[in-house]
Length: 306
Image: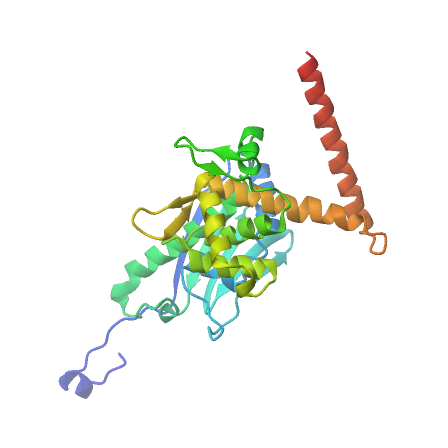
């Protein structure tokens, strides 16, 4: 015992404290090969999760310039089993594909005070709940990133002018437009904030994506954009508040448009610049994309003719 007999006679008592808590979730795939393919895509899609503006969504803690510790994403290769690691202060998330058939997500809390929780053993249940919520939010982010396909009608609904059931006209959100793409990219930062986003918070992020001073993206422009997003069904305004939540449909629109813009159109436009030729593997990949698109178009024409 850490206390002597004299200490105990003086009224001192020991109390247990939490040194470390690990909360894990294991999801077993009925088809292991599909699970491995999924996890490899997860790694490729989520390399930026360690950025401060992303990690605070997973841990629901504000990250400031003076926040201690490293906010980063690491991919560690042990043999042929890669693992994804995220860090917030002294907290750590590890994700890997276990025994070739299960996705394992582990959150380890090494210092409860990082999450503004005391170390007393009575807080163990609450810390376990926090760990489970961190695992859930991480998996939600990854799930949405793997399921963002839209039908032609859904895409038309976004890019074309529309009229709502009560007669309100909404201008289209044109794909490729600099302001629209910055707006959709900024929405992804607020996907899992339960309290929603506001005019002020979204405006700051959009201005940052546009690369302009906040004064150059005026409040009236933000108001106009919020109205468009709401009428298009991308945002939902919380009744009797000035806060907005992103709808499931909005998730897909924002992810699909930003991924297409970053991975297909930007790289394709870069290939048009003869001064900066793209690497051969990327050029071959773009050529394969063009070939597959031609095949889809030809097949659609045959279907229409039939």
